[in-house]
Image (cartoon, rainbow, N blue to C red; front, top):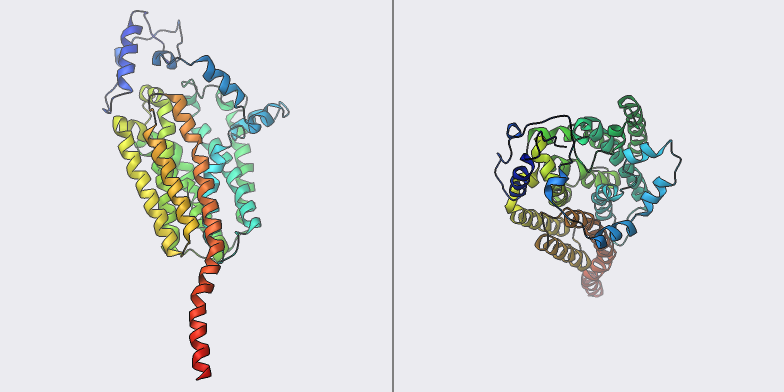
Length: 382
């Protein structure tokens, strides 16, 4: 929120903010240029001069998710905790799960589908740990969230949940997450526990560096390593490392798009992000990360001897990312939000391609063995 001291400073400030969202320089806005008073509070979104069509509002109301409906119909006493976990916004849980699913599917034996029990276990883990991450983030950012229009209604900001209650709730979430982790082998338990540091420090990175999305990518895609080790007992780094790099590039891509929604608030509050770092060159940067993601996925596929359905899926993912970047309007928060959510389809398409490609791997190996068997039979007859 901004609190202008005089009405006459508002037009000049509005012009300044309109220019700032299109600039890639660091010194976009100086707070000392504005005088403050306690008489009036104005959301920073006011200065964006963004107009929402009635059709956009109606469509937003129609798109209320099943998860949001579930939260709204739950007992009032637990609704704040459900919103603290972002149960009403499940996209984050899906984005955390998909790298796990890719890794589990890639590690399956040729001709076999991925272990359903392992997928369910990692699905539960992704749900719990995403909720824990959101709780940690809100505990760190409570003072910041109250100044941003999009986050001012979060439970810790509104007072529905106290800091102590959030800490107790976080302990419960981490306890459940630990129980899930203990179902895996010791290699995976140690590997999974080693990611907790990234979970804790991520909210601090936006205060220190313009690359918090990189830390988020390293955190969110730990499952690309963990899924393989949970099935195989250890990591095959020739497969897991390119898959992990692909996931990190993917996260930087979609979270940069997401960060463009809040860039004006971030400027005013001194929060850093890749959206501010890239500025007008966002599409160029995202194209580089998208290319790196596709290259890394191709490398993983080659190392694990994947078949054509996998490469078709990678091609579809590449086309989706290219269209996403080409049509992106970084100055339209609604478009950024829609592009961000569409990345759920990226995860699903790639997972499907891995499963189908793995089913064909057994047929490919059988056809490769037949010539050898024929030659052996000829030698025996001679």
